[in-house]
Image (tube, rainbow, N blue to C red; front, top):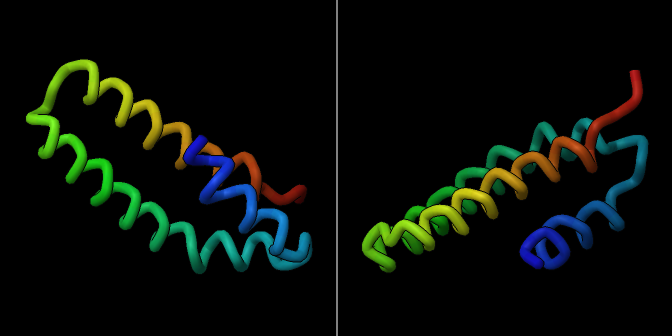
Length: 74
């Protein structure tokens, strides 16, 4: 769900010619903000094992989705 809300709208807006530039400019910002958000959730949930697994999976999926969606053909 998080991917649909945060990544797909951005992907739809970006022109295919500027995908690589967009990725290089905004991926680090997104990754830092999302990492801090995930870390805050883990701390709030007192590092509960189930929460840790779910949040880690969401983080890795979101990061890989950026790579999959914004990968350019070379």
